Image 1 (tube, helix red, strand yellow):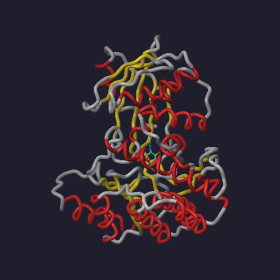
Image 2 (image 1 turned 180 degrees about the vertical axis):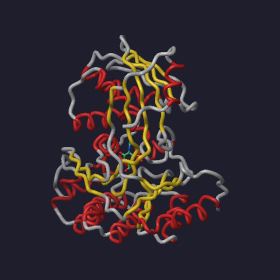
Image 3 (image 1 turned 120 degrees about the horizontal axis):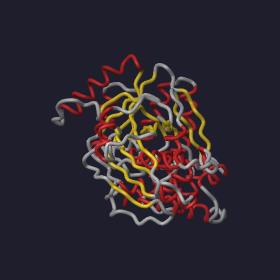
Length: 402
Ligand code: NG1
């Protein structure tokens, strides 16, 4: 891990009366390659951590207060007492992500000492690259390290996935797991209940391009409502299909899928789910099969096969799960027109980013086409580095004492 930059040192000194910090956490963002809206249904995903991340520097306090500032002026300093019952800031406040981690750890391991901290991040915000989970995980790791909390990695991933629901999203466990458990050079297949991460090396000649649509999908606003609506629709579809098949309400999506082939499951579901719910169900179960096929394609260095799965995934997210939007569809179309192996929206959708897979030999040409036909065509000028970049498969979050 590199040392913190001078901007962070100056920000910390300014915020906390000239003193300096002793610990640093680096937590990456992620791009999801396959399996969206499957994690909260207990079904697998294949994300990878990226080179963009969040740095949190801090120094232990003698009391139980967390005082946290941000180098991004949009996020004013926040402080709160680290207890097992923390009142949230108003909805949408960035400090709630720190409170989420703090409350969960204090409930289990309190009383805990707090810290003074400054955060700096280069993960685009509300872009489906998991900037929020990087913050929750960074705060959690810092609390764990400064307080010598004895907790294993898998336990921390699961605790923090649950903890992030503090902000009001009924999310799954993908983001927290990959943020902590990623291996450099690899994506990971993640299975849930129990949580398992299996690294899958990215073949040398593959490049994943991340392209931001320009539409922010703020989870604190309207996006949260639709996201939570999808989680409820999936639960409802599961309950009805399981009941119709005489399986009882305790069955999970993985349980359902292990019991019969997907084609039979879909035929049974179509008979019991109304028109609005059946496509949601179809997305979830077909996306899970695409995750397994994607793992096979990755291991076989089958770029064309992986690309086709990405295209099918995008169609399913757009048509069956209804989480795409015109800008994401346009961006995938431009990428496909530029000759990529495949392209799909990544993360929750409703805006955010597209991920496109290109052979390394073609990547510069594809980047130029995207720049010209999407960004310049829309009137964007200047540096595009935050909106358009090649993702490097990176390692997971870690903490160092400086
Ligand atoms: P993003 O894309 O970061 O909003 C969300 C959920 C994931 C997963 C994806 C969709 C959170 C913190 N993250 O991610 O668990 O459900 O949507 O696949 O809620």
